Image 1 (cartoon, rainbow, N blue to C red):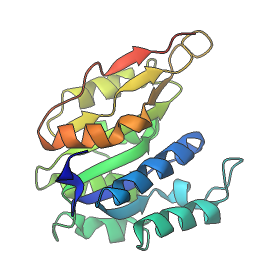
Image 2: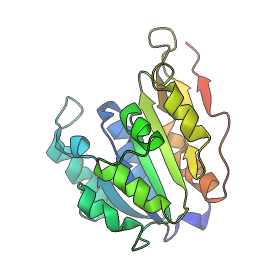
Image 3: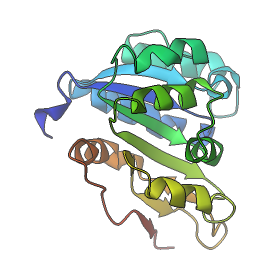
Length: 198
């Protein structure tokens, strides 16, 4: 892996696709092993809801331990990211359809959407790791908007169960470091969407 990660300041944001948290945490750990500095951000729901995939305390503690920093969970605390130039790249992993819709429509009502908006004021890249059951239905138009939006890049996505969940897309989280490196060069990895073999 390239030494591009050494000292790279990554805003590492998580939204409420709880079933993918384990994969996201694993990639966060890998990024720190590569030498990146993570600025942890969680949406209010991601930070406070307990599910069968982990309690809120377990999830926040794990991200806190990986990053070595307190987690940004409020709009007020996320707002200075851009003005203070705290990040080189912003990652949202996982990024729900709800969050993607807000980003596509410039809605800023969570810590994560504010973090992205604040980061974008400096024209730096944002990498989205989509995880949603309706990405190819009602949410498809929002992904299409973001595909065409400057500074947005995507971790390649797989139709994880195109027979039982034909509209579902989940990022291939193992490709997150590669997607970050490509985005820093202004490159979108392709294919963006593919499907697994049943």
